Image (cartoon, rainbow, N blue to C red; front, side, top):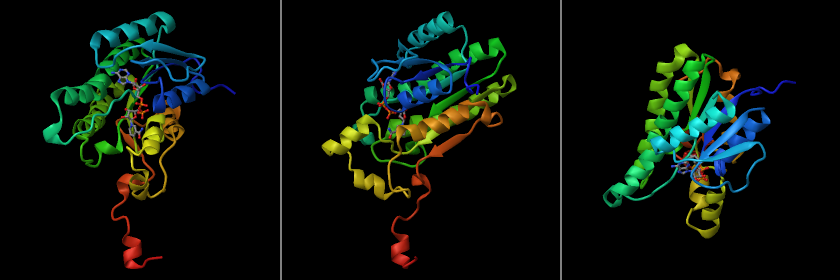
Length: 256
Ligand SMILES: NC(=O)c1ccc[n+]([C@@H]2O[C@H](COP(=O)([O-])OP(=O)(O)OC[C@H]3O[C@@H](n4cnc5c(N)ncnc54)[C@H](O)[C@@H]3O)[C@@H](O)[C@H]2O)c1
């Protein structure tokens, strides 16, 4: 059976670990040639992924990485904007440096990579797909997550704008908004007590965090031809977290 991404080239930012690594693994399985654009070295390098050192917030670094993809693959069909950082502080304590770091990485990074990918997809005339990782934290307000919530909400807005700009060229632009996902970092936080697992899980109707693979699969779906008429959308993948209203209402009302 032909693999759905056979002959396609995908760039995944932040694929050295976590959700990005799961996306790279899934795209490889489906037959894509995969490039990772990451600041860091891969935790567990995957055979078949080309790991490029790149800073998505730096225009010259992004241009350099796409130039390398041109030289090594000669085309780009799929872009996944996944690279991310987190800085947590209340508004009055958030430093300008942290504010800019988070906005630049998530939102400017998405813009810079989209600009490079769209230019090439348009010129080649064979369409393309872009999927960006937003967050449940861009849909609801979470204390201490000012720049992160703003950047993630911004990713949804930019997704809609770029979808309209590129639809006529058959370039689809969508986003996936994950809830809490059991990456190594979250695992570590749960272990050392810096993340309170029970608080998170209590609010999730499905009663558990997502596995990275459960975020990767919807990303791969949106990047695939199966989603050929979907553009400008954000798919929320959060086990029902953002649709939960009152957590204990059923107990209170004695509903069974
Ligand atoms: N883990 C979760 O619970 C969760 C929930 C919702 C959304 N997300 C989002 O999913 C994405 C991946 O998250 P994760 O949990 O796998 O994070 P992670 O920290 O494990 O991985 C992020 C990767 O991005 C890379 N990166 C950071 N800044 C970069 C830059 N400027 N240029 C290039 N690469 C850079 C890091 O080196 C790292 O490899 C992020 O956008 C994050 O905001 C995560």
